[in-house]
Image (cartoon, rainbow, N blue to C red):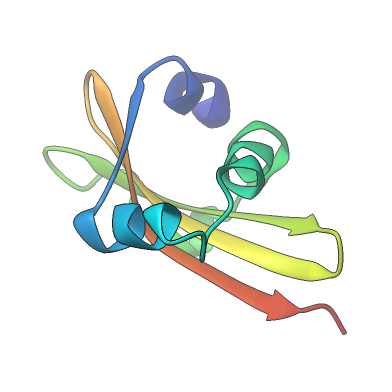
Length: 88
């Protein structure tokens, strides 16, 4: 339900993440994959934070583990952090 809710909103990025997208460091296809097919890790999230809940979303993409942090507000969802690791 949370992913569906996030995907129904306007998606924005922090300035630092937008800069990495603009410089082709981060691929938006990977971001879309994680936001559509990822898993919410509630133990690493703060869903009750006011005014916007913060969620950690994880997924595997090719040979990488991808972790996003998303601030989920009323009408806008903002990707605030992006991390990749090589899969074991």
